[in-house]
Image (tube, rainbow, N blue to C red; front, side):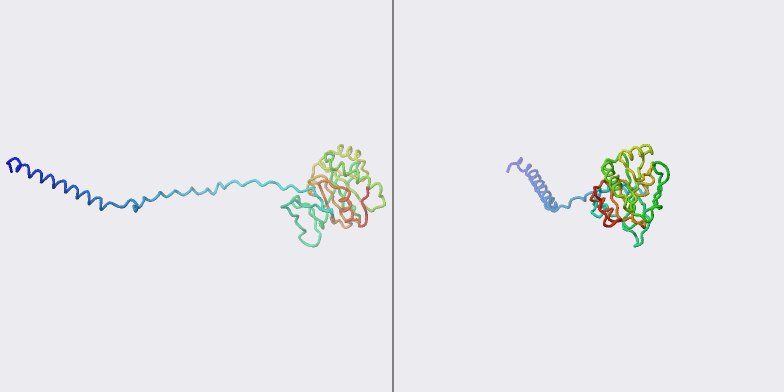
Length: 249
């Protein structure tokens, strides 16, 4: 071996040894590295809880739609309630006065007071007719169904003076002049009172024109109807306070 080769041999050996050392280090690092398939992912951040509602600002309530009563009438002459509504029965078997706009009058209730100014002068007082069957009709000139019903009622009353029946009309929320003109137009001969401020209407819960109440000799409501009725329903109501009487037209 030449002198030059002998001088390069240590350098080559050192280079080879360095390469071997580098390979060993890389192999050790690879062997100790964690498996990507089993690596634990970092924990997901915990969402912050929503802020608590302030007690001073409750969520707004959804407005509820008013319940509008049906205008259909049962054969007995009492109102058939709309779906979802049920009239409250009297709390006891003995009749009691009731004029609540929420529940209205029910069959078996004692009719509430009714005192109104009469067209032509004087006063109509329901209590003065105790001992007689009474038919109370709330009406108005703007009520189209009233214009259909009133001629039938007026004709029946005129043809049957022998009946022990008192018919009372109550014109609601109109002036006496308007009520008088309407009564004359309809040919009404039975007494008609006026309720210009609607207080009597509210007390009797007579909301949908026309409204009818049939009251017996003891002042008890025996049938009622509203929303427009015909002779069959009128006859049903009348029969509750005058059994055997037929409403003929």
